Image (cartoon, rainbow, N blue to C red; front, side):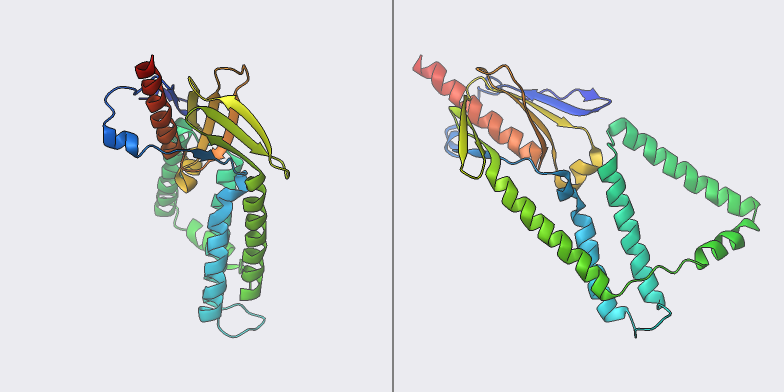
Length: 256
């Protein structure tokens, strides 16, 4: 049904309507989707771990934060450190692309840094007190209100994103490709038969967060390529599209 060559820039697969047109059972044809919606999301949707961390931190500060005072409690500092770590990792994932080769390189780099730190502490034990004192001076802390405000702002932004994508999405039917866009529901129609599909997964971590990737559509009656970024659950979408168009191809051949 699809061919998936490994590339340095990411995983890519290409499918056409003619592929996989043989060997479909009647039960499989009966379960074919009548329409498939493709909704590209902005990259901010990948920041949901920060939202989850903010909610958990707000609850944790309410339960384990201790009494308010000028000096933060140990639990409050630990919660702040965990929250900052999640924010940092999530922003790094959003800022850079990590294809398969880069992700493997990053893994070995982190492993080398950890091993080097262990060897440094083993052969230079006087370095450990210095590093310990350096981090001991850092006391990041915030109250439950701060984490609650962060979570509330992100929820408002997410609601705005979910509303905005309702006015710009693609719909694939067995015989046509529809582009819904604009507040007045403007509609663009393209021919769906012989539609060629390319799936690209350029970032391993973004794929792990939301199973998202890039979907490129090549309509047969249009020279342009339609590029949809950050389509969630892209594997399932590609499979449904290929099954739908393959069933249409079989039906056209039988009618002829």
